[in-house]
Length: 213
Image 1 (cartoon, rainbow, N blue to C red):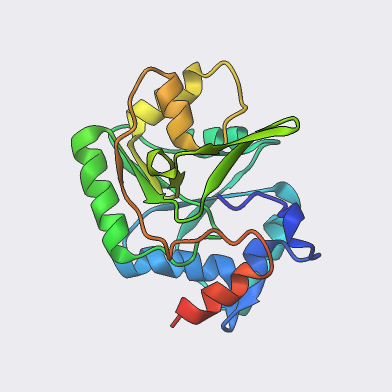
Image 2 (cartoon, rainbow, N blue to C red):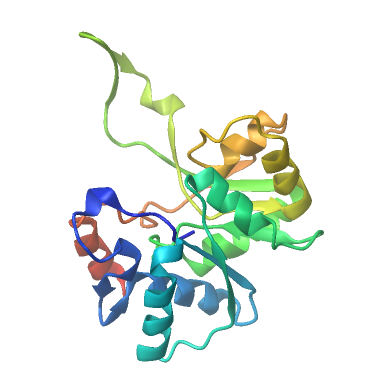
């Protein structure tokens, strides 16, 4: 998934194309999956205005990994749905944010294995900070032991997640596990990786630089 505009990033270059350690962020994300499996099938969801820019990047960096481009929609929900339409039945799929380049081979392997057994596999990590819920002028503490941060890739049997997206009555979802759950299924959670951060702000790039090798 790389169709977002990245409004919080405050740069003219889409954040998925920002160069880090000598190459665009999105290329690092592709390479993370290629370290897991060279023959993996990739579907890249982009917004229409940046498709040509992506082609130029592939040419400049000699990126020749086979992938299919799908045009995204006005929301993340619609973009994922557009991508899912290209997925064959009886597949195992991982829906991933293009700006999470630090995904590990171990997490990918574990996610696919668990999804094959359980229908889904969602990586989550514990929260280390205290949390408060705010309503108007009133706030109250929330027990953080009961909370988890949700990551991608989110893994599914293709038939189940495609059916969930087709039956959804709203597009107001921020992740795929929520779509899956609204269809009456319980997402299977497993321990994610704190290092697997999503680049949202420019300062996140410094963390990525530390871990990229």
